[in-house]
Length: 418
Image 1 (cartoon, helix red, strand yellow):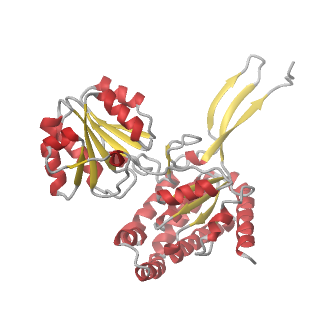
Image 2 (cartoon, helix red, strand yellow; image 1 turned 120 degrees about the horizontal axis):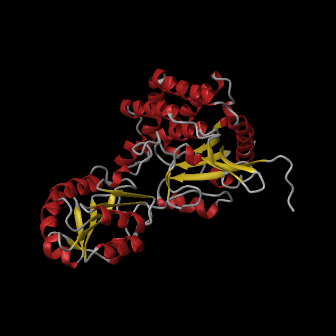
């Protein structure tokens, strides 16, 4: 069988399984998730042996230490996967929940209920734990899933998929509800993206180049975010200690992720007091600062920022810093350069915080908290299948509920339209 025919067959099998998953009971779905968690614990040695094959391959290919770190299924990572699956099992089942219900003047009772989306396609890089997170969320929401991970994680992903399929079989559900495209051939992605009759939604997870490739080549709707250009605005009168802690965490705790701060905006009245100590803290930790002219006057160690810096996703210990006249200028700057991912304000004024929340158009807006909280697990979703900045259907971290849609149910007693 050719590569194209095998992927077509695989996608069709997922479509058939999706019909069974859509009517699966909450008890049965949770049983599958608990079984997955048990198998992850009992098969840890096998999982790590397969993962070692990928790590050896990655080192042979000269992949970076950061990439190898994301690829590694350590005891800690596997324990986190187990905990995540258990948390998803404990979440309310979104399928069948009533979104709203009302009676029309003619007596028709109209309701909207949540239903599975169908078959979800996931294209992702590096992290094999995504295989477990994505499958668990899709199963909880009554969907089937077709997975296509990076070539560097081939053995890990194949092993984890087989584990999930065995859990489905053990619980009397179709193993085909979770599929993995079993090849390193990049041509498989193009074939997958053409299966609009079998796959309902594509979610790419990875770098901007991968996501743009998927968007440009897919015949299937795509939920995506290209990058995370995230801002923290330190407002007039903000608590300086709180501001420093939040800004440091947002930039330094994990700089290579999409919810790390890339630009710091500071109100002019607080800048002379706040920036010297904040800048020293950053510089002592190895952060390169790129500032506006006023910033460079206060912090001589800062480099002069270019126009390109304001819209950059550095994913590194590099930070743009700008002093603004007022909140309106901060919001205007965010509006111009943001990727609609995550923005935060540090302020002591409630009314000003509410103005920021109303006017900033990003998937997560935080008040007096780090941007690093834009994460499905941190926001109580158990895990996330991705973060959407496209607004259509979902906006922000996507958990089980975001993997459902709604349909109208209309109950009548003989009404006809005049």
